[in-house]
Structures are given as structure tokens and as C-alpha cells.
Image (cartoon, rainbow, N blue to C red; front, side, top):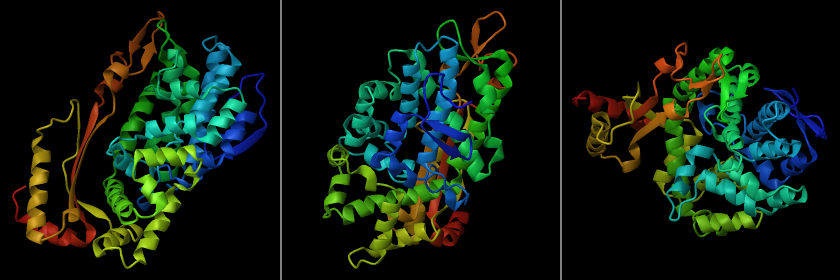
Length: 431
């Protein structure tokens, strides 16, 4: 399956370690060749996961091409079955899939909270929208080839006039997840994160309500898809050491933005308005992992950088980051309570440790997150033999209903250099 319907011509092919040859059309090649899209070659898909899984050095670039390819296969199938009306719509969907991650910051999710907390904030999704609409390279490439940037944005934001299009890229069983689960499992070596994409696509249908669904014979593949997500959340995306390095990187970025605020480029990167200006001037190409790593190395050599920041940078570069001191993470079927006793206790212990060690605030940190694994309302539907559809969560033969709905991550981290001292103090505290 080459991901292109009959009548759309490929002008270039790229070999991918997951999907084999990926065909590219003329508009797609033009977008790929822009400096803005090439930036994704220098942004790792899993940020700092390579500190734990050395093979996890794959990029947003390869993932974006993979998502485009999977979208092409699925959209072509739906076009041939009459659920997508034209070949132009298949091409539009492929382009939207290709651009879905174009707004990621350096080191992706590790840095994005810095921008989400600005006033006004700028999320990854808002930055993607801005790039598609205002980046001169991307916008002009779309318009030259007859594609409306606003239509691309509507699909990316899940509000396109055809609801089915939105589900393909932003549903519970979407092409983004299909690619990243396979790609991340391969590069980390976490084999239980792997899924059978071809079986999934072969059994995907559209139900009577016009929603994406899976035929009953594809239930096993769908169960594996949900189980793979669960395993990857626990073993990779929220791995204790990986999260620790992302927390460290976030602190370093905040400090570098303050230390180098007198530099014109950094001054712009400190605000949402400044980032907008960089995008509109077509200068986003420099903003990637290598740029940030270079800034860190440079900071180590500068006298004006305080010792605390210097030690944080060394901890990141030389793999001496945060280590878990306490971990109360667990699966659950309910949302994390705002007054959760474990979380309150972790914050209490963190304050005690800082006082007894006479350590700065950065020495000890608490990380809390509540990750939905299955949302019953959004669960993929299964088409039964009589043609009706039922939520996979409620299907009588489905193992999905026995899976936990959420993962509560509740951890106390301490810098590696202070871990032995913190452990001794902790042994004297009633936990």
C-alpha cells in the first residue's frame, strides 16, 4: 500500500524504517523542502528518552512523514469505499497529517509548559496554527498548490466541516497514534508497545452515524492498540528517569531565557508575541534541539552564568539528573483528586527535605500528572454483525473494559548528587 489513490502521482519516494517506501506528491515535496519543515529533523520525537533508551533518537521529521503515509493509506481506503468524496480531499488529509507536529518546540513536551504558562499563553497547537497560517514558507507552499491554509488548520484542530476528517487525525484511533506507537516501540525496544497497523486499517469502517469504527473481526487488533498505549505510557512516556530529565530541561530553559534576555533572539522567544514575529519573518528554522544544546554548552563557559544554573546544565549534559525518591504512581478508574493524600504528603516531604538539607528549591521537586488511557465517551466503536455499533469499552467480548482508565503519576524527585543524603533523611521520616 503506497498511500496514494489512483490519479495522484508520486514524484519522490523516501525509505522509512517503519513503513518502507513512502511516496511523496509534488505539493508534499515542496512543503518538506521548506526550512520550517526541515527544522523537524533536529527535534527528537521523545525529547530526552535517549538517556534511558539509547536508540530513541528518531525525530519529529520521520514521524511526520510516517503519519502522512498512514493517513494516505487509510484515506485512500475510505475514498475507494465512498466515504471520502474526492482525491483532492485525500491529498488535503495527507498534508494536514504531515503538518500536525510542525509547531513543536525544541525537546517538544519538555519545553512546551514554558510557553503554555506565558501571558498570553502559546500552546503547541496554537503554534502549529500560527505556522500554517503565517509562516511564509509553509503558507506559500500550500497556496501555490491550491490548498487553503485555513482548511488545513480546521482539520488539525478537529473542527473541519467533515467530521470524519477530524477523527482521522484527532480521534481515539487516529493516524498519529498509529505511527508513533510503532515508531517509539521500535526505537526504544519496548516490544509490547507494538501494534498491527495493517490489521487495524483493514478492519476500520464507518458506522451508520458516520463515525470511524472497527469491524468486530478487528477487535483483537484494537485491544492490542489500547494495551500498547498503556504499556508505552508506563514504560516510556512517563518513565521515571525520562520525566526527571524533562523536568531538569524545563528548569534550565527558564533560566537560559532569563540569563540571555539581552540577546535579540532570546528576547523574542520569551514572549508569545516574539515567537509570532519569528514565525511571520520565516526565521523559525533555528529553533530546535541542537540550538538549545549549543546554548547550554555556551553557558558553561560564561562567567555571568550562576553556579546553580551551571550545575543544572552539567546534570543534564552528563546524565546526572533527577532521581526518584518516592513513587506513588498507580492505575485508577477515576480522576486524580485535588486533595489526594499521596500528593499532599509528597509536597510535605519535599519541604522537609529542603529544610534539613539546606538545599535550594531546585534540589527537590514533585511531579504529578493524571493521564487518561481510555475515555469511555471517546472509545472507538465496534460494528457488530447486525450493522449496529457499540463502544469497544462496552462490547461483551472486549478486554478493553477490564483495562484501567487512567494512570496517576505521583513522584518526588531529588537531584542525583543529593539522593544519598535525601534517602537517609527520608528513612527518618514516617512515609
